[in-house]
Length: 204
Image (cartoon, rainbow, N blue to C red; front, side):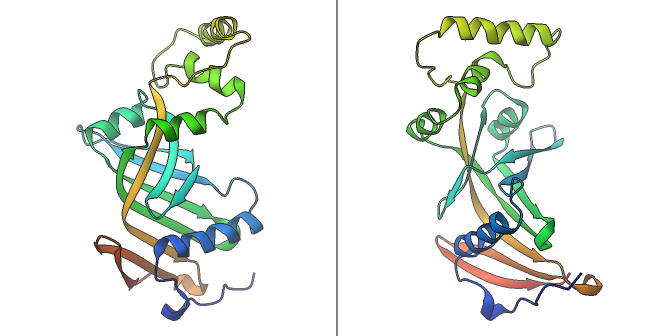
């Protein structure tokens, strides 16, 4: 396999969001299998770190957005400690991006707008599943889904109050490019003050 081209400081966008947009576009072209998948790590008051894969649903200069059940384990940990990290990995490109920051809820309008785009089955599932809670068996979940399906028959499914979005507002974003001999290129953007990012090269 040919080693990726080196990345120089002059190759980088001044904004980490513009740089992420470039890499994300390339990932969508070269790695069509869920390039939006990202590992979300959270930590509650007990100090236990928990990680899981969630899907990026949007990003801009305000941060990176995903949606979930606020009553889930991740939601509970974020309510205790909003500091989180995200990690994207695109093996075809030998790239990863790490995001560190704080998660805040999106507005109800944003959550409503996204929920309305979800397939009806997913909308009903958001009501049926009490995410992360213990259930007696699969049959109980299926029955709750059927109950919701019956209750909302011929009606639009509203967004549950316990379901919505989080926006991760970054303070640091690292771009990692694999290179030969494990001499990788690593650049981190650090937020020095609002909208003022400094760029540093890190040793691999």
